[in-house]
Length: 207
Ligand SMILES: O=C(O)CCC(=O)C(=O)O
Ligand SMILES: [Fe+2]
Image 1 (spheres, rainbow, N blue to C red):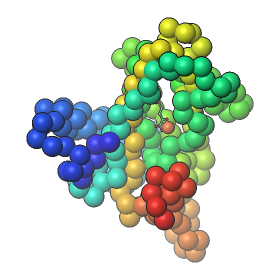
Image 2 (image 1 turned 180 degrees about the vertical axis):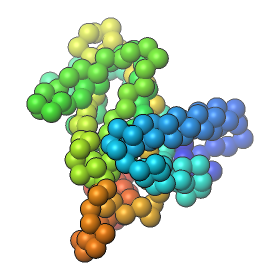
Image 3 (image 1 turned 135 degrees about the vertical axis):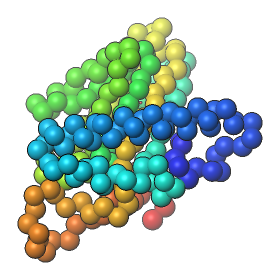
């Protein structure tokens, strides 16, 4: 996983790879700014509402991450109902996802039906995450998704690769829905608290 603070991951031998990922991270953060601006327009939010919550994207304190995901080939019989990645929603604002041509990704629509998200060459799939759902009071719904094992034997024996750019607001952003009254006394989680609690329950972090 590549983040702005992932100094320890890259040793000298991987210098070119690191440079490539840094460049990709930079291009994606520029694209993200445009996407956030489009969301502001679509949601009729004042200029900068979302952009201002993501100002740390290129700093050491950012918790946005570019993750390179590898699903190994399936070379043996697997039990029925075995899947590559179980149903979940992503935790942040949005995820920009690149997938190869193996397939298997499914998203759940509002009728609770699974729909195949076929790989489209050159396309980036955008998933809404939990925090954007909270901030927009559910106008944008976090997309449940999962990854299945292909049925076709030939595809099963191939590894699957995807790249996910998990976008999170600055750590200190309070997840108070847009338009909530100024004097609202409710206590809202910060972006950092939400991320920490989701990662802890997914057992990625120790409490
Ligand atoms: O590999 C994929 O296509 C999706 C991965 C995913 O949903 C995730 O890592 O959160
Ligand atoms: Fe996901």
